[in-house]
Amino acid sequence: AWANLPASDPDPRALGLSARHLAYVIYTSGSSGTPKGVMVEHRGLANLGLAQIKLFGVCSNSRIMQFSSFGFDASASELVMAVGSGAALHLPADERRQAGNKLSDYLRNEAITHVTLPPALLQGSQDLECLASQVLILAGELPNAELIRRLPAASIV
Image (cartoon, rainbow, N blue to C red):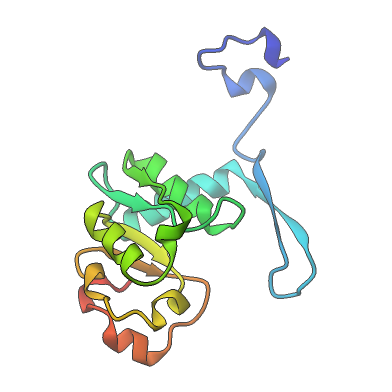
């Protein structure tokens, strides 16, 4: 059926597609430790994007860093925030995603406005001031109180 549709902007309704159809399937062990596929519908992905764009104040001038690998569910959040708002999505090289000066320098040099990071990555970092002018989204684990005290107050979401 796809072969007969125009390459320019096919109408999904012509194929009987709706917001309830799958956008993607991601495999996770979740809290059970047993790998399983999680089916994400288009409507869920769109709702996630709209909610996060509003909550985090993402706009077309925003600069979002893609920290998560594409095999991790958080990558969908970063992608949909950027694409759904017209923001720039920055894809740093793997070695720049590590803790320390490389990540801090990247955030500064690229003027990143929104970043999602796991608290463990920031635990030993001495340079947290690079996060002062950004929206910092902590995800993946509960941050400890010491890290929260050290973070620039304006950046915590």
